[in-house]
Length: 345
Image 1: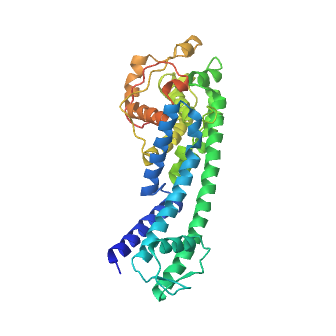
Image 2: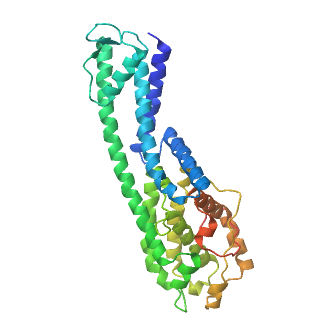
C-alpha cells in the first residue's frame, strides 16, 4: 500500500467534510474552502460584468456560486475517496476476469459508489474495502441530502432580503427622497413606524447572512430589489437624522438607534465575505434641499466631530457597494461631507 496516497486521501476527505459541515450545518457562515471559492467566483463574475459593461451578468452570480460549491464538494470527496482505493493496487477486483483494476477503474467505481447507483462489474477485495465502499455509499446519500437542505434555506433567505430591499425602496429611492417623503413640515415622526418594522427584518437578514454568507453574492440589477443600494441609502438617512437634524424634528431617538444597531449587526458579518473598509471615503451629501423645505440642519462644522466617529463605517459601506457591482453615484445621493471613523452608532 502507498501510505502517502492513502493518508493524502484521508486528509483531503477530512478537510472537505469539515468545510461541508461548517458551511451547511452551522450558523457561522461558510467553511474555509467555500468562503474562498465563493469570493473567487464572484470576483470573476464581477470582472466579466465590468469588461462587458453588462450588470445583468451579476444576477447569475449567486446561482453560479451555489453550483460551484456543490460541484467542489462532490469533486473533493470523489478525489479523496479515489485516492484511498488507488493507494492499494488490489483494493478492487474485476468480477468477470478476477484481475486487479486500473486507476481509471477505481475512479469510475468511486464515482458510481458516491452516486449510490453501484456498479456490478467491480467489487472490493477484502473486508476493509467492503466497509469503505459502504461508507462511501452513505456519504453520497448524505451529501445529496445536505445539498438540498442547504439550498432551500438560502433561496428562502434571499427572498426575505429582496422583500426588505423593496420595502426600503418604497420609503424613497435616495437619502433625500426618504427624508422628503416623510417631512410633514414640522418633523420626521412619521418615519417611526416603518423604521420599527425594518429593525426586526434587518436583524433577521443579518442572522441569515451570518449563517449563509453566500447570500452576499446574490445580486439584483433592479434597484428596487438591490439590497445593498437601499440599505446604504437607509443608513445614510439615519446618519442625517442622528447628526444633522435638530432633536425636536427627529423621530424617536430610541427608534433611530435600534435601527442603526440592526444595520450594524449586518455590517459586522461582511468580513466573512472578505469585505473590509477601503481607503477611499464616500462623496458628501448635499442637504440644502431639506433646509429649503424648513428642516433645521445642524451646521456641518458643528456636526463634523460626530461624523469623525463614523469614517470606517462609511468606507465599509462604499466597499460593500463596489463589491456588489455598483458605484456611489447609483445611490442618487448629493454631496455633504461626512467623515467617519468606526462602525458606530
